[in-house]
Length: 225
Image (cartoon, rainbow, N blue to C red; front, side, top):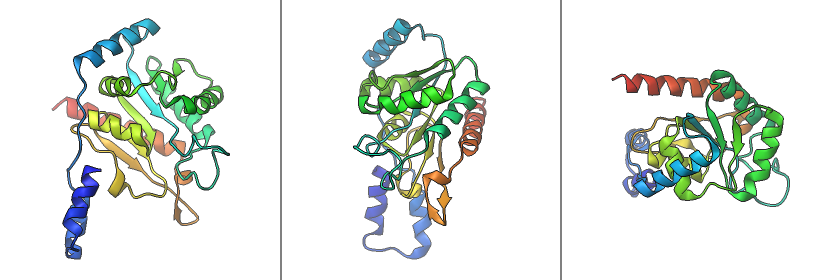
C-alpha cells in the first residue's frame, strides 16, 4: 500500500504518460520486524510438533471472499483457485523436496478449505495450521520459511514485509498496483486470462510450480553473491 499511495501522490495532478511506467516500478515498501519473543515462541511451537529441524514452505489458499457464505467458486470470488489445482501444487512441492514442511495458513474459517485440499493431495508432511496461525506467529514463520505461495491476500503482504520470498497468484486486480513488497524477499506475481479477461482461473499448477522453481534459483544465486 505504501507503493500505491506513493504513486498516487506522484500522479495527482497527472504526470506525463512517459513517466507512468517508472512510477509503477517504484521500490517503496513497508517493513515488519520480528522480535526475539516471537522467534522464541516459534521455536517452542515448532519443537512441540517435532518440526524444529525441517525447512518450511508456507501456503495461503483462502482470502476474505472465501470465508463468506456460499460456494467458494462463485463468480464474485475472483481470488478463488480450484482445490484440485492447489492439491497439484502440494504434490509438486512434495516431489521436489521430501523433507520440507508444508504449512497451510489461514484463519479458523479457512481451515475447512485447507482440509479439503489436503484430502485431495494425499501427501505426507503437509499440515493445516489455520486454527493456530496468529499474526505474530505468521510473521516469525515468514522470517524462517524458505518461501511462500499465496493468493493475493493479506498474509502475503505481511510475509513480504518481513522479507519472505513469495509466488503470488492474482485475479482481476493489477499486480503492478498491489503486488506484495518487502525489504529483501523476491516476489513473483502470476496472472492469467479466461476468455480474454483477467482471471486467476487462467493460471495452471504447472505455471505456479515453474515460478516456484525460478524463485528458488533466484534465492540460491543471491545467497552466493
